[in-house]
Length: 444
Image 1 (cartoon, one colour):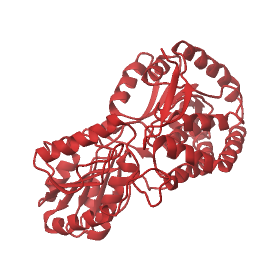
Image 2: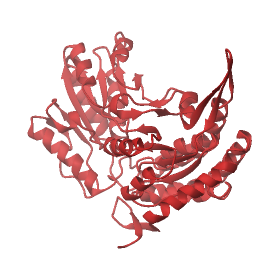
Image 3: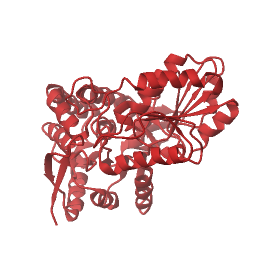
Image 4: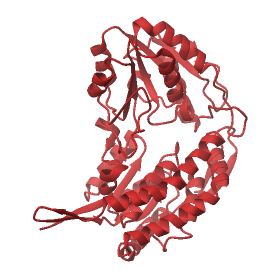
């Protein structure tokens, strides 16, 4: 059996690089090394731990261009987006570190005090769509809180993850962060091992498997499990703004984003004008590889995901959806920008996360019915409402962890990144989110 993991450029199928797969029987040893390292790491002051993170982040700053190119080659997103992700991770790590310091300070309460102690070894399992940003958002709070980390990146994007860990390990003490390379077999073994917590971002199916495995020893969990985000466009919405957002959100990162808009419900009185503007905006988007000029939709990560998107489009069309743009003749490795209307509840893309560059539109005449349809999902990560008079009232009724009015979800400054229903278990970001990487201890 080959012990090499090859990473492919999703725009052309060429090999970007390869890494040795971590043997299953070595993972227990890796975890034990992390447990040993954690004993001394947790004894350092939080300021000292932050110093390590800040020095490593300064190094990331000097490598932004090369890391961004690697990320683009491996994941497929255009250079501008990759640069933004790497730069955001470099700038965000020290910010998160200082925020964690505030989160874990001992608090005095009536009759005693509350402390926030490290848990031990945290397994961080991250996705391929934002391979650096999602990893950083979990790794940094875990480390600054005094835990050690065993990091298992997606098998689709191992090279950028390895490059990042290599930079961290130039500054961190030995075994404070280690990386495991492989697929779900390595991930399952890591969850089964003698760790204390799993911080995971990925699919609902994988999250449920992690939850089952973690239950054997009641390991702590923080999991973000995707979404099927709705958008409600009210009768008094600014049509151009709503249409522009609908396209940008649906097409961002080729639709491969957990908070992409997946289902749009627009009031029938403005539906025709809204659809016209959506098609106009969507028709300006261009497919292509990361290094091609003026590209804003890159390739789909692999053929399995691409086939799923095509299946969702064909299913919708076969059940009565109307194609306003695209929908077929997709170039190899890509999905053409697609706009569909007349979407109904019996279609796959209404029930499942499509995760591709598709704008799917339904019309409504009764607002309460639109809210009911928006909430009729096992997911509840994000939701958006565009409008004026009733926007706040609608936002209150939407069942999601993050709801935005006339804008993007997750833009709440120091607010947590949190999902409702089956989109999440626990949450991260914010003071309260950082504390989930700790054990609360009360002394009275």
